[in-house]
Length: 81
Image (cartoon, rainbow, N blue to C red; front, side, top):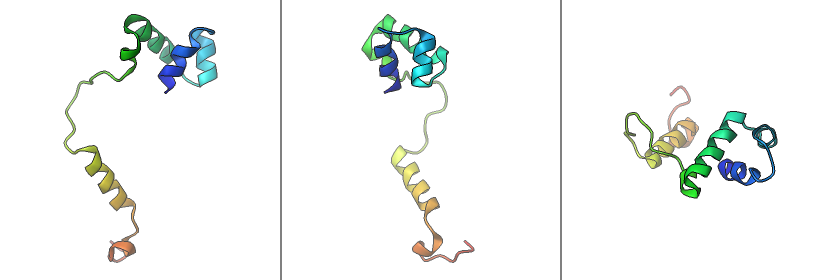
């Protein structure tokens, strides 16, 4: 959503003005304006990143986080656990 706002604000402002208004770093505004100018709307999505692929799907990660945040008494476990 921020990327879209940056591109829309391009018509009326400078990098510094857009950055101040949208509370982003000026380089961020410059980057998204340049990418939009180069390839248009499809280029506003994330590009593939380098690095190791995810081991667990997002749903599994969310379930583990929810379990970790749950009080032990709700799971029938002692508080010391």
